[in-house]
Image 1 (cartoon, rainbow, N blue to C red):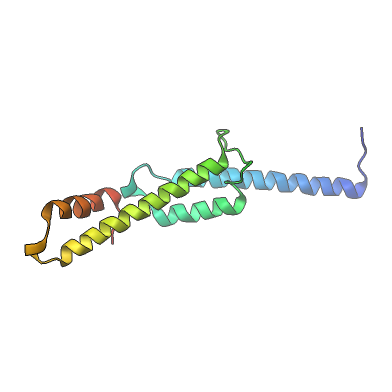
Image 2 (image 1 turned 120 degrees about the vertical axis):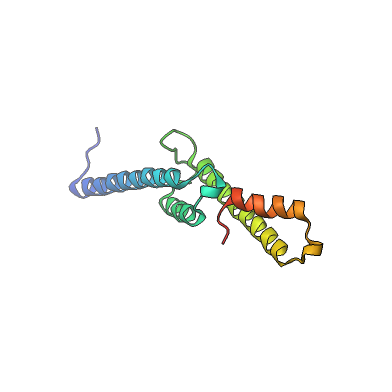
Length: 130
């Protein structure tokens, strides 16, 4: 068995402490992401999810070698969460634009079926419309 000198032992202890800290922070960040990630667009707080994803990135949740608590790839998890966030924002932007266009159109030019589906209905299902 190799022996570690006093200075080496302190260095090993610091390394172990860093490992333990980073792993704990990754697990904590993963939990916060899962807690704020909603299954329904209308209830998703996009800014909150983005903040938690950024924190997860800072701690390396998406590192190519990191495994989540369920032993799945951290990289795949973070990629899918970012994809969800992009889909939420794109859907809300499209619904908001449809509402704006429909609300500004004169009644004689308003295509009611599209206004209802692309604007009103999507705004209700996608949420986040201001």
